[in-house]
Image 1 (cartoon, rainbow, N blue to C red):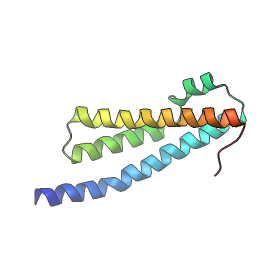
Image 2 (cartoon, rainbow, N blue to C red):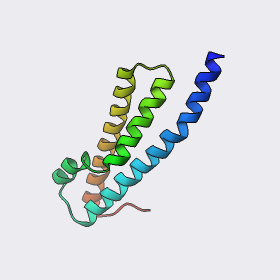
Image 3 (cartoon, rainbow, N blue to C red):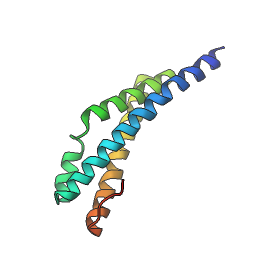
Image 4 (cartoon, rainbow, N blue to C red):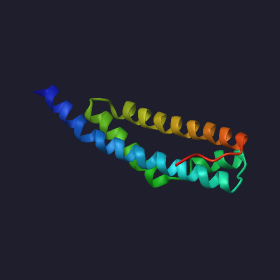
Amino acid sequence: MLITTLILAAMVQSPTVDTTRAAFTKCLRDDMKKALEAKVEEVEYEMALKANCGAERDAFRKAVIALGRSGGDSEKVAVEDADMQIEDYHANFTDKFKDYKANNSLPGE
């Protein structure tokens, strides 16, 4: 019974994580495109990246933490996982920005 409850809880939470993840990455992609169009320098983009998309980032973080907690993770582990995922997205978009900038191109839709 406990396993069924945990599985159902994870299934209920997953769309929230998926939805918030999609919103967060869309915001990051839109922000990156605007920065590329504005010819922002790499250093400026990296500095601004963590400050942008705050509402989407916070919603994603909360959803990841809630999912981790519902799966039995401690608060500390769930928070660390959420923060690590966000840092991975920031690093990924920083790398993408550098690649697009070096190729003088823009991301597709």
